[in-house]
Image (cartoon, rainbow over all chains, first blue to last red; front, side):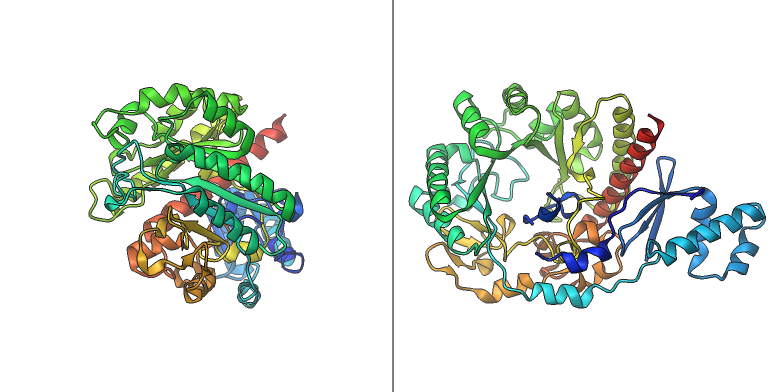
Length: 39
Length: 455
């Protein structure tokens, strides 16, 4: 794309089927937490 | 839902429900702003005096393509899924052990009344700690990784019990096929070779409490006789951080109404050589002189912007450091269920007092109405657990339409309770700061991406 640069490929809607199996979090925060499955 | 903003020269568009993040030029930025309210001919009409026809056609085509790929204006279809997820049985994953309700400092903002604990100083006995670890093992189901935080007060005032509990945990983890991840928070006053060596061997993470510049730290973190703690703790913390290879620790400070220029404290800690830094807003009653006030918010937001811009510059010069609240994982972060279901307090995470009572988290300790049971009898107030279980983004009206909800998870239940008397609400000042931090964190990722492209 000429006008857009997309920074990431992860899409939240793709985690619905595979997700829902992580540490508790506190303000790591949820934003910087790593999924146990993706380790 | 999209959130678009400009920061440090970048035009950023966050597609909230997919998590896609786009850095765009001015023409796409303006087209996206009109997209949901106008049809294409109307967008042409409104922007034709600003951009040429070809540019506008390209921009509209690209926005339409992103929408078709569900990377822009994606719908929120997660509510039923998250409600179902929250209804599943939970296990206990982590405990915060209040190993010492006593302290050798008298920090002015301490939730434990300057370390006095309302006259009820206490140290946790080995027997209570052992019962807590047994409770955690018994209530953790098939989960292997368990976390135990040694907290206080000041844990090093009861360090023999810390060591004995770690030894007990290591013995039990072999028997029950568990893996304990121990962590420690300390003010550094009693830190010595023996404690550092033990922590480097056994503690997966340590948190070292210091507020930043000497005058800031010493105003809020004095000894009981009024003298400051900065000169004593800084060399020890520097040595400790180096001995951990500058990883698996945080120097962690608190900023208050008295140091709204806290970016200077963050940078001061970085200039002292610390690579892992967190400086966070104080949690206080509105009546406290150091509490963050509504009128402080614009100053704080500007301060976060200033800090983020400086961090981007330092990154370019190879002088990076990590700021806890600007950390964001755009590729490996957790699933939707985790993002929307909250921190785990009261269900997966519990705090234990020196005498073995269970509370939803360390911020609730001492609020008797939140006592959930004890380490011997387990959770007897299952109604409190259910209250916390129902705490998620969709249960909070203020969160449902917030762009930051997938990065914040609905905020802190304790903050909400302190300000509204209800764990299902949200603390507005905290929300404003959190939103800005998410914006800054994404901007830093954009700057990083731009630089890696240049290399």
